[in-house]
Length: 339
Image 1 (spheres, helix red, strand yellow):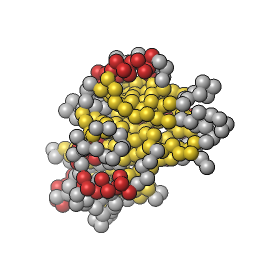
Image 2 (image 1 turned 90 degrees about the vertical axis):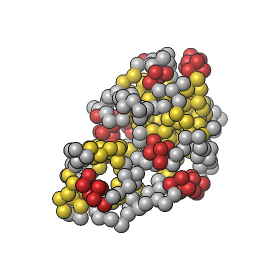
Image 3 (image 1 turned 180 degrees about the horizontal axis):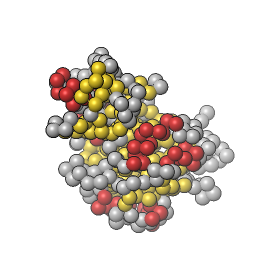
Image 4 (image 1 turned 30 degrees about the vertical axis):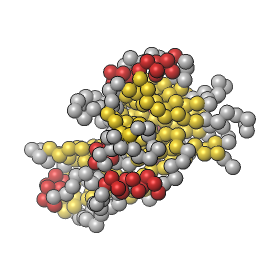
């Protein structure tokens, strides 16, 4: 199989007309963009998700006029990528559907049941961690508050809010895919926080074993809600970021679920968010990047609009996928030659 053409991904922003032409030419793509543009795309070999925030080659931008496209080049006619739609009942088989040697790009709509299911259960799915799975959580313009949606390209620009879409990409034996995470945050020295349920919305908790209200604790300590809760999930630091606190009810809305029985602490403060993020990008081996996505909170808190994150480009998302659901991270996948 050494004579097989290598797979590579081209990452670039295009206008609507160009993307339509690429679809008509049969190219395999993952597309991110405002719902008004995705809805106009014809049927073809693509998956999509709604988001108007991007890191382009020229820097961070907010756009409802352009689409960010990962084009998968070098696909073989005898073994092409496979595009699949999943619902809450079938998402558990995603790793089983993955190619024996390759990778999977996955898009989940924010706040959907399939999003919650994946967040809660992905590490336990059959065959998980055997084949790289990367992707992102679709969202919407923060001024709109509309529903996050995805698109199953073979059906055209029909947007769906309760299903996930994936593209499974076989690789030749001469290549391997590797997934990496950039996370600025470590568990702080504060009290241990535990929750009675697994959910995206919480109120009651235990703080060092004492029944408490999370909203009251945050207010009483004057905590910076840009800092996430952090837990150690089998050696991986996983963030749970705060989306909104309802002062009248004490309910705290989260971008990712907290898990019952897991110990969390608020993250150690980062003195200079922009500098820390820039240094973290430089410290990581970011050569040969085929896919990447960055969290909307990194975009906002690092004030990335108009700024570059090195050569890393991609959609700015409501959550990141590196096998499991992550939050307030930068996720990227490299394609490397096997020696």
